[in-house]
Image (tube, rainbow, N blue to C red):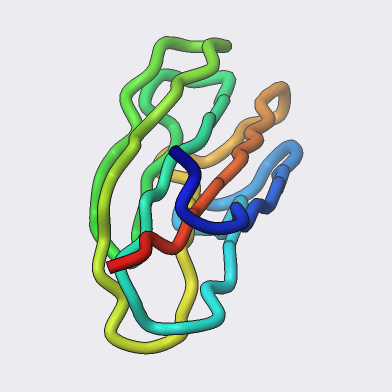
Length: 106
């Protein structure tokens, strides 16, 4: 059963980008409990991580798309759900991520 309208964002990073650079950031407009899920791809293994509102490496193989979630998180205030590069992209590497979030009715 759907609780509310989904929020979504897509982001990419190209070649030669430093680790800890944001790939995708989803702005959450209000405090509350959110169900979060998505997909992430990096040309190197374990190349992406969620840094906010929780810390978690998104485990994957090289050139593989990893699905994550659903994860339930409590946001105390409006903020961002952020995926960053865990591993820098090299001359032939890229990364992409989708984030979906749904405010759960309580």
